[in-house]
Image (cartoon, rainbow, N blue to C red; front, side, top):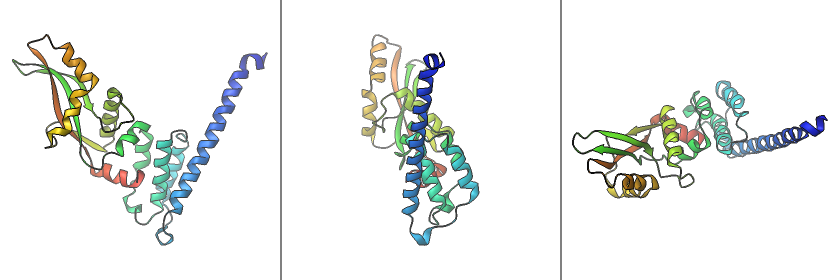
Length: 221
């Protein structure tokens, strides 16, 4: 009766165990490869304050390739004299709070990147309502603008990027593609018959912070 009722659960547990073991082997192999790439004269003993929390936290993220890879790079960087001074104790905690999409997006922040905010506003008193913040189009692997908005907010919360709508890139052409998204086109269609309320696109910038730049150097390169 047990096998009849719970047999499927047992199979599920076996499959999850196999996946976890494979992910653990992949993590080990990645870490070994990163350490092997360090010149022998640059190898150093990693501080326990970095390696301990990193290894402890990483055991919950083996099945997330992007997160797993960041932990491997963090540990390897702490063993490299050329990078060890750039390793901050907070990096393990930052990685723990990141999603795979956060990790993907952060790789694009080698420079300030364009973002926009979709708004609808009244022409008379210039008041407006925000429709969607942090519209980000740099990552072609994720087209969901709501997910991207949350990801950028998360990166800003972690102190890795700054979001600024008071400044923008001087090249206006980089913002033209934001007018072509389905979300903005739908907003224009929705307000097409309105005289007082019009769609508006506020240009902005997402800029890597000094902490973010250092994090990228240690955990993503």
